[in-house]
Every structure is written in C-alpha cells, then in structure tokens.
Amino acid sequence: MTQPQPSVTPNLVEPKLGFNDYAERLNGRAAMLGFIITLAIEYFSGQGLLSWLGLI
Image (cartoon, rainbow, N blue to C red; front, side, top):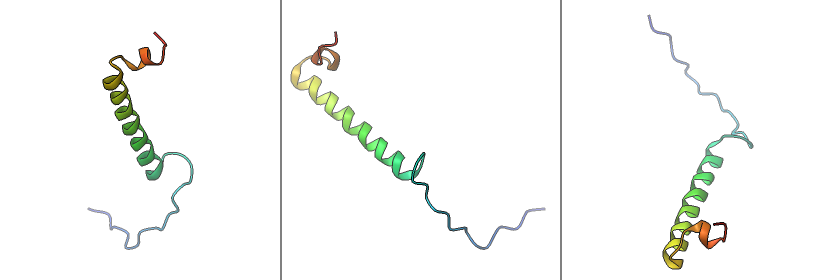
C-alpha cells in the first residue's frame, strides 16, 4: 500500500548560513578560479606554486 503524496509543497526559507545552494556554488566557482590561476602561475613562471611562493 503506497502513502498518499502531499498536494502542497511547503515554502521554506533558504538558510543564510551553512550548507546552502548559493554557498556551495560560490565555493565551487572560487575553487575553479584558484585552480586556473595556479595552472597559469606554473605555466608562465616555469616552477611550481610552492617554489614560486618561496616555500620550498
């Protein structure tokens, strides 16, 4: 026997903090941008990021 599905979807407020869609999308875009910048630094300087920063 199947349960009846609700006829109305609740209108929930998106949380302003924590794991929400906007925060995850922004984090993903920042990570992609950082990865591309790291590749560009390694390509144009001819050395790795840590060497370029003087850490190794």
